[in-house]
Image (cartoon, rainbow, N blue to C red; front, side):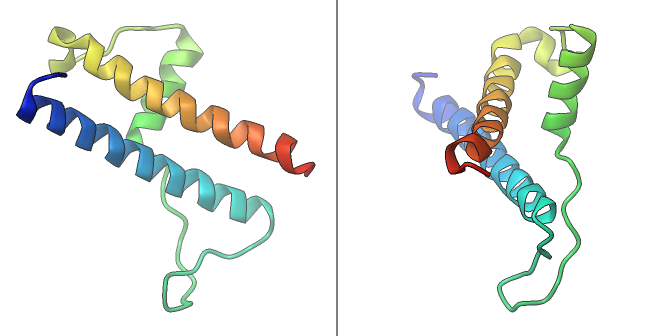
Length: 102
C-alpha cells in the first residue's frame, strides 16, 4: 500500500467502509434505545440496510470460511483489510455499552 495512487485508493475504500459501518451501527444503537432516525432537517428516515461488507463478514464468521469468491481471489489481503475494518467497528460498538454502564 505504499504506491501513491494504489495506496490512496485502498485507504479511500477502507475509509468508506468504516464510515458506512459507523453510520449503520449508530442507527442500530439509536433504534435499540427507542429513538427514531432523522435526517439533517429532522425528517424521520428509514434505517439503512445491513452493508454488504458486514453481511460477508457475518457469513464467513458463521461458516468459518476465510475465502471470498470473485476478483479478490488474486488479492485476498484486500479482503482481509476490509474484514479488519468490520471487526474493529463491531468490537467498538459491542464495547460501548460496557463503557457507559448501559
